[in-house]
Length: 137
Image (tube, rainbow, N blue to C red; front, side, top):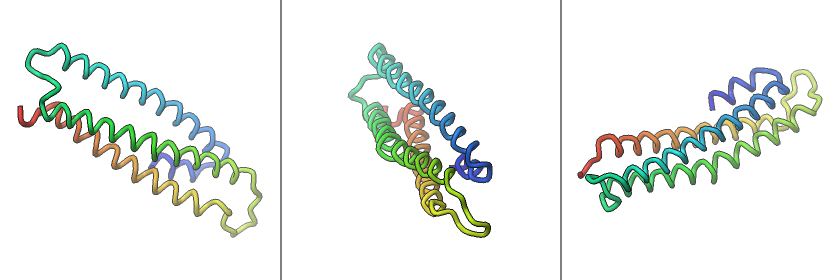
């Protein structure tokens, strides 16, 4: 969200390019998140003291699924719409002192994306807490 707000202060063409670069980096981070799941499942499978029937393991997996739902079901969808609106806005000529036609929607999308990333991060922290402290084991 902060990233999008900073971009809005820059030129629209630079913003569109930066949104694309951010999306590419986010896809790399997403691959690493999937890799962490695969590594974690393999580690639990090989462990003698940790098993899938422990509540914290199931809760951590459930939180991972919730995070993927937030990411793919909400954040990515809103980011795609943001890119479309920003691209449309880049092609419009705006009279001095007038508000661009898509500015309100961009503001709404920025707030939605920021809030969703906040929720995503809280869920990640909760999952990490479960994995580090293993409550109930």
